[in-house]
Length: 378
Image (cartoon, rainbow, N blue to C red; front, side, top):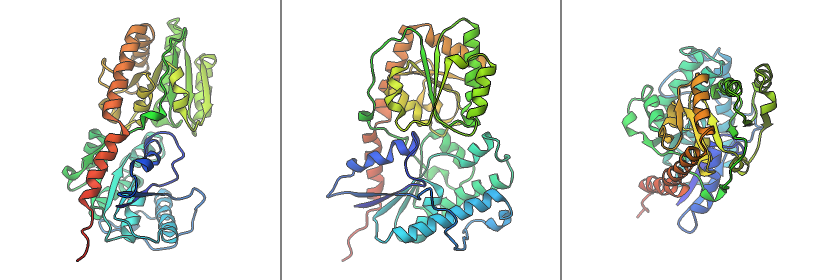
């Protein structure tokens, strides 16, 4: 069976799709399976010129909006690049971005297209202060869900909470299949250790949606309680200067290390003790599973896919979003009790191994792909 895994940009960033798809290659072995990974190079800009029309809504109602114009041009570029590069047939195409799913179904109308919706671009834009809920951009982007439902053969998503979110915008949400992301355990090398000073770590893109302002305020509260720690922040993004300024203003700059982007944060995480990320929304939150596989105790917010990964008090702690005091209380509880921290981290590791193994994901996907396998013509 010949598969095409269609991404958006190349899998360079940690987390999510990049933590999973490149590691599929050896799991889909010849002679029974053949897999190709396809994506749009970041340098491709403003190449496509084709007219774009959707079957379920008229996007021209929104065409004066700059965000919509950019999105449509990206569709054109993906279409242009796909026509240039994809010149063979496939048994199944698995798309991992709405643009990829829509474009490839246009180009391969007779090929089954499975579409995984990994996250909500419009929710990210709202939380990052780029667009307004209910505004032009929001209405356009949410209209694409029904458009995808109309075209592709099967829609998957990564958590039950995100399936519920999508149900608002689709006619048949009961057809959505939930398959959480999976991870190759061989990438993670947990290290048994006990740091004298608790080491906190977070890994994410530095944008408002990740709630790092709340984390810094919680850490300032920890310092006010005379608790010692070091906070490691791995990742980069547009609000890094604001976060560094906030850390200085709160008097915790000496306790906080900003590393910037790191290609393989899983090689660094095992030396820390507690993974913390107070996101304001997460469809899944891949980095929590990765941190669990590194033997870290987990502290996260009670939102989206995070709440499906963490059983509060069993394999991590959950706090409300936008609540620095609650976050400080949770961190203090884990920091001050090494035995409890050990119990949480080992329970997190066991759940991640059982629920988010790459083998489990691959086996589930193989069953779906085989449902669409073409029968040989007589």
